[in-house]
Length: 365
Ligand code: NAD
Image (spheres, rainbow, N blue to C red):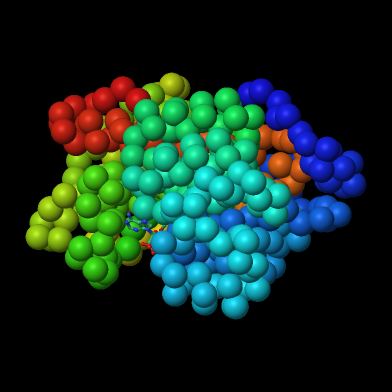
């Protein structure tokens, strides 16, 4: 990855702090130091996640703050302006979006839009000279992810994916236990993530062109992540099958998908995703004991266990830790631990799962 061209302002900021990188296995060292000035984040798309999680989390961040918004809904602009004290000059709509380039208050643009818009707005944000966080799933397919990575690289801007669990203590402990083989070699992994869809039958999430897929894209991405970060390895083959019990609702996208991921050493992990089952778990069997997470992937509470008993970690505001870390990455000109490539690796797996569902065969990732 190229190094970023830093402005003088960036340089002054970088010189004013000294923060150690968040080390694997140090899950509580989340706010190591404070920068002299918080970086400004603009949220793009004020739907459920921005409203319910990101904006509230930005009231608890140390290194960044809610500086601006991009919305197509004038009533939301008025509400957010007064609720979060956002100056008019930092409020944009989708027509004026590119003018953010001229706004020194905005350092980071956070794309919280339906999946089909992720590529376009990530690229436009980078070309406006801003660093970018893009929500999961990164894009409609791996090809789009590559274009986004290239655009951010060409613009010398950092790109990160909204993978909040890399900053969540229980999930960080799973990475340490699995990758460092604390209980010996991992012998099996089974993981699932899903919820029972009771939302709007016309929502973008149920439209293939807008969401890219169903439960696999939205929820399965966490199961794929969980398997990859437990092992610290990339899978090379996948075999998948699916189940549909509500084809009326899921006529364009997948409902429940089951898969087997094969790794270079021959290890096979099982995983699943659903819009029709409430799942959130990761169970690992290693040579010398079992460990895992349940619930594993939500932001309403994560629980974990090892052969020694319950994991002793607190619940944190995952999004605050995630955004603070990215702000530090920008300040220190270092790559995020969840860069675009992390999103790309998941989307390669997702693409191969869809190929396997279509072919009925094992597919190369
Ligand atoms: P949402 O439907 O509640 O919000 C989407 C927003 O995009 C709305 O404000 C909508 O007005 C806006 N929008 C702009 N142009 C649009 C268009 N052409 N069509 C539809 N909507 C348009 O969705 P959400 O739940 O906030 O999800 C947004 C993104 O955040 C998704 O990528 C989702 O996967 C991700 N997300 C991540 C997490 C997480 O834990 N990391 C949780 C929830 C959602």
